[in-house]
Image (cartoon, rainbow, N blue to C red; front, side):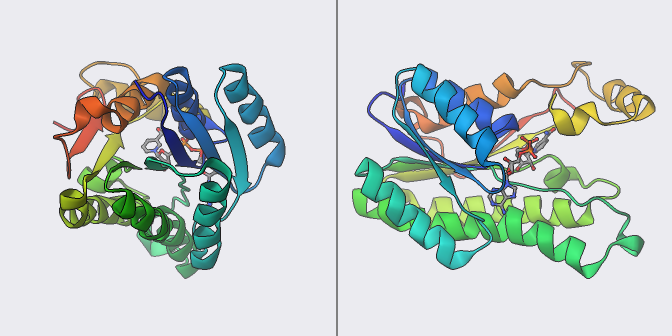
Length: 246
Ligand code: NAI
């Protein structure tokens, strides 16, 4: 579905980002994978990707750093010639009740989850606009739609990401670039594996499909939104949450 396309994916070395990269590679896309910290993990994912027969390069970059993201996009264009897909997946949490939250907890989450997506959309977006085609997929969260106790920083960033998605969609549509968001609910990852049993029980009780989502559930939608099949979908926010927020 993505043959002859190149995807630039942030936070792609592990978790949901890694799953998206692997699914896109299975569908024929070359992958420019952005990681922040663990080069070892990034190398491992790079090998898994090249084993699927596609070109894959890794780039160390903090998406919150405006100048670094500009250079990142230049480097990807140098290595691949071009790219068609941007996935803004990099994200962090620093959960605390608002009353206990430090200024730095708020700033760090906004800077990575929201400003990071702005930085990437600005620099990668100008390349896509020149090409007059492209796909941007932002990984938001249902926390950004319904709020969540202990996550005022994260919910604000993920709600902001939905605003960024909708405005980018309107600005870029006439140049053939679509921009959509995916809002996952609880997905089975290291993050959710660490939840206390009583919290898991409560989440499942409120989830009509009565299970956590899988990384594949998110990756499949990401492939679809990045493909030619989704050419008439833009500015959309697609919840993948088992019905948790209906
Ligand atoms: P994760 O912590 O396993 O992966 C996040 C990735 O982002 C890591 O590879 C990390 O190195 C990278 N990253 C963090 N800060 C960065 C920065 N400043 N610059 C570059 N890369 C950076 O998390 P997971 O669970 O895979 O989440 C991926 C995305 O999905 C995040 O945006 C998260 O908010 C979102 N999400 C996850 C849900 C879940 O249930 N796991 C639910 C809803 C949304």
